[in-house]
Image (cartoon, rainbow, N blue to C red; front, side, top):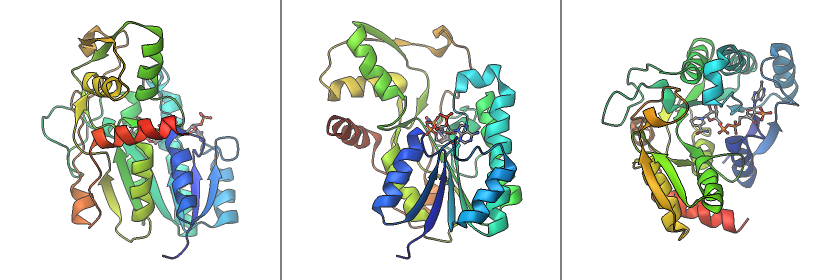
Amino acid sequence: MKQLKVLVTGANGQLGRDMVHRLKKNGENVFAFGRKELDITDINRVLIKMKEIHPDVVIHCAAYTDVNMAENKPDQSFLINSYGTRNVATASEQIGSKLVYISTDYVFDGNTSSPYTEFAQTNPLNQYGKSKLAGEQFVRELHSKFYIVRTSWLYGKHGHNFVKTMLTLANEKDSISVISDQIGCPTYTLDLSERISQIIHTDKYGTYHISNTGSCSWYEFAESIFKNKKITIELQQIHSKMFENDTPRPPYSVLGDRALILNGFNKMRNWKDALVAFLSDLENR
Ligand SMILES: NC(=O)c1ccc[n+]([C@@H]2O[C@H](COP(=O)([O-])OP(=O)(O)OC[C@H]3O[C@@H](n4cnc5c(N)ncnc54)[C@H](OP(=O)(O)O)[C@@H]3O)[C@@H](O)[C@H]2O)c1
């Protein structure tokens, strides 16, 4: 396969770091930028960097990801997720590179009980989801060679995530309450990175849903983490309304993988297998 020159934004984030790791392992020529090296809200800097490096592909992982904080700071969330993405899309289109924009299951309202296809109606419930959807709209309007990759419930070695939080809480508490009325697909960042690193070698542009397969509630996810780690702890189911923060979240945000399959890519492995692999990777790091 031809070696690609790939620029990654948000390269110090949870997905960004595994994305860079996977690309390098695949032999790509990677230019990884965190916020300090490339603040995506500064369009001039973004244009200068793109022209300087002239990548074949831009993988845009930078985002404002604090869903609860975004409710109180919607402007910050729109500045980064929407206009920051506008800047990345404008600059990468100018130099003719492909663009991968990472989006989210939170563009949906969760008012369904079967997996969302890539063509399903969006209707975000919270400011984070709205700002990410606005980012998608900029990409569609401004770019001619894009892949919008919606994913969900990410966890990986780097950064904060649900798996690590559960393992930390298990060290501190005898009993934990976990939400049981939100259903989604937990996704290992290394698995997602692997699929993205395949897609960028094709001209199969468009919107993709890429998550590990299967589905569960946060409660079932926690149960599985503790079972795998052989941790004994009292787990209690709670409903989202009883949870202290009241940011609305979709009750059902399982992503169907029609685009992956119809475009000839392999199905992602089941979330339970991915979790086992992650817990083992975490132990062996
Ligand atoms: N986490 C999930 O469960 C989840 C689910 C679905 C979709 N996604 C999407 O997946 C992508 C990656 O998420 P993640 O979990 O890796 O998030 P993350 O760990 O929070 O990483 C995001 C990175 O973006 C950087 N960033 C923030 N503002 C920036 C700016 N103005 N310029 C440049 N970089 C900036 C952050 O840097 P600082 O640390 O310096 O702020 C951080 O390193 C995002 O697009 C997110 O919306 C995430």
